[in-house]
Amino acid sequence: MRACFNEFVTKLRLRDESDVDFEFNDLLRTVLKKAEVGHWKAATRKLKQLQKRYESPERLIPAAAYVAVLEACSLDRLHGARAAEPARKVVEEMAVRGYSINKPELAQLCVTSCIGMGAGGTHDGFGGIDPALAMLAALEHMPSAHNINVDTYGTVVSALSREGSVEEAVLLLRAMVVEHSFTPVLSVFADVAQAAAKETISQEVLHVLTLAKAAGYELDSIASAEAGRSLLASGVIACEQLDNLALGLRLLTAAGKAKDCLPDRGDDLVAAHSSAAQRAATLIHKRAIDKAMEDDNWKLAVNILGLMPERSLTPSNSVWRKVVTICAKCEKSRKATAILLDWIKLSEEGKAEKPPIKVFNTVVNVCEICGEEELTLVVLEAMKKTHKTEGNIITFNIALKRLAKLGQAGMEPTVVSYTTAIGACAREPKDPAYAYEWLKRMSSREVKANFHTYNTALATCLDGKLESTVLASKIATAMLEDVDKELEEGFKGSADYNSVIPDKYSKVLARQLMKQLRENWRAGDINMQVAKATIRVPLLKLVDFEKSEAASRVNKAVEDAAATKAQMKKDGDDDEAAEKDELAIEFDVVNRMAKEDPRVAEV
Image 1 (tube, rainbow, N blue to C red):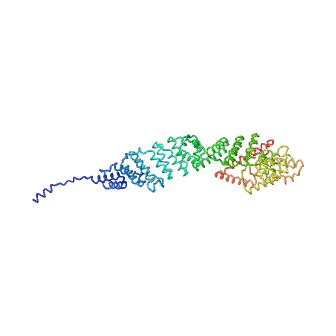
Image 2 (tube, helix red, strand yellow):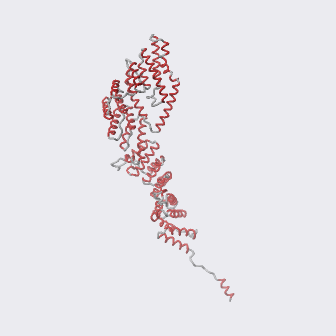
Image 3 (tube, one colour):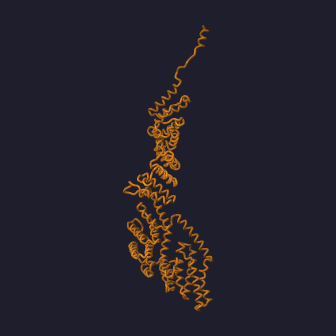
């Protein structure tokens, strides 16, 4: 019996007919059930258990399970971004397995829901730009990458811009436009450009403008939208930072062409978009006017000045003054007068400061040069009304007879006034004694003479008389004394109009006067030895001035002044150019008054 039982057991074969995938399928059903009811935490935990315990190359988790868990995570904007990390892991796992998300809106919702307005694009510390970028990269590696829409990319780009990651934002924006042929909304371009302008990465702002054009936007029309105005405003700020005046003005002009901005103008809205944009626009117009002055382009300067009020930009006194001066320099008396009158009108309305008397002086001078007598009277009357003073403070630069009235008005003439008076003494018949009296009056009134003044006074002494030669010697002595004072006090102002340092014409006059002195002793008017020991000494010093130690000190002072001037211009304190042009106009009047003797008051 035992033998038969053993034989039966040996032949018996047990078979396990249970389901070998039971535990896998059971856990998979649990994952799907948890995902269906929205329990995203439990669903993600069970999915992780399923991966570690039961998944094998022959038994893979289906894509539907991942999609179901992802849907559970995506509810309520990733549950306030708290489900951002689990969602990121699910998307990355699907990308590794080569799965696609058959619901494009689901993937895009997960990416955009990661991003909030907190630091790093987070929602109360959850989510952020990093998980959003990770999901976006994973989605791009899926077979369904073409389903990612432009808004998904745009949301990430704007978040990068807000965080200050300008370079990364520009790279992703460029990929949208160039690689994917997307046309992002204007607000995306505006966000990147604004961030770049804030970080003073000016070239990136121009890059964004280029991408906007490549995406199909026209700069002449985008100012109709708020985002377009923001983009153009950032461009204006960048142009000011790069000192690209032409492009800055071009962007404002393009904004001005936009429609649907009524009752305002597009360029006005762009310039007033922010305090930074308004400052940049003002500086661009100011520098453009400076450039126009350098090029003697009075029309451009006038046009730019006219645009400033239209764009709600307030020209400073220096801007008004420069435009008036360039018009006067180019002998456009009517335009200079019109601008001055506009300036006066604005000052009466409280929108600008009063034009200084010196500006009236400049306009009157150019009116005299152009022979506009009626305009001269108009300007004088306007000055009287503006400054409550008589017009004769201006006309002393036009006619010598007005000098006497200056003292009566309680106003002292300037160096130009005295040079004009001395120039009148140089006309035939010459009156060196009267010229010398004017020099003494200047000294008593503490009005500093310049080399033009002394040259004109020396020229009045060229009448062949010994008395005139003696006066010339005294004038040369006074000139040399003033040179020493200038070197002690330091070089100040423009070398062309404020300095007393002798120039080449001073040397020519001194030689002519020494020749006149030689004729005097040959005529027996004075002993030769006495003349050489006394009268000729200061004249000879003027002739040999370039060889003296003082000349070396002058050159050093001029170099130092030039360096200081260059630094001032760099810092924006560049009103000296306008002042120099105003003086040039005034001395031009002096030259014209002395036209009978072209040597007198040569400038």
